[in-house]
Image (cartoon, rainbow, N blue to C red; front, side):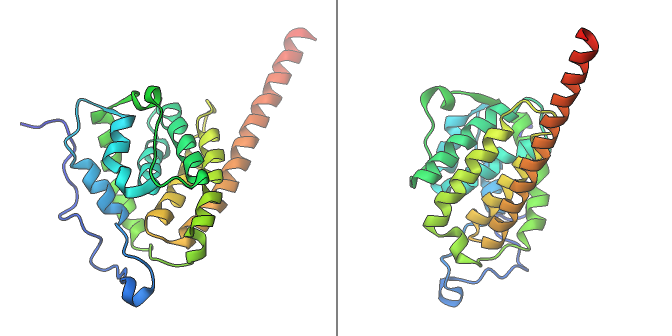
Length: 230
């Protein structure tokens, strides 16, 4: 009998065989846990009927902040209606903790108690998994300065800004910052500074897009006001 969870879409839970990630002895980088393995482990975890944000931190806490940012950004990229605020606020707090140099993520009790529908959440993660697999073929440790501790603190500030924008109730305003956060998260997970840079560029574009949408709404509102009261 099916328990409502989507099937494991990966034959194993390792990085793609055709991707040579090297090791610490040959590349100078510490070994990394691939993003695809993070998603596989999350999909195969024995979740309850609803997934509390606190449980999410507990499941992924030892994978550092990048895994949490990736998992929380995915529902906003595809997207899933109603999840922007529920996932945006935790990402804003996670960004603040990265900026503060914390080792492990933490959520306040009330935020940790918020729950997400298990089936809907796992369904969207499973849907995103093949896309992450394709992106992972291009991930490799490089540009170490962009994932160094000092750089990570600055990235935390960038994540805070993008998550704050994502949490706003702006039509078409969720996907661009969520995509930027996902790129940064992939870069952090696999120590790929090039993906971090791509995420920062995408973040700047996201800010411009959302600013343009807000400006357009503001102009439309002013025109309607003039029509009604002039």
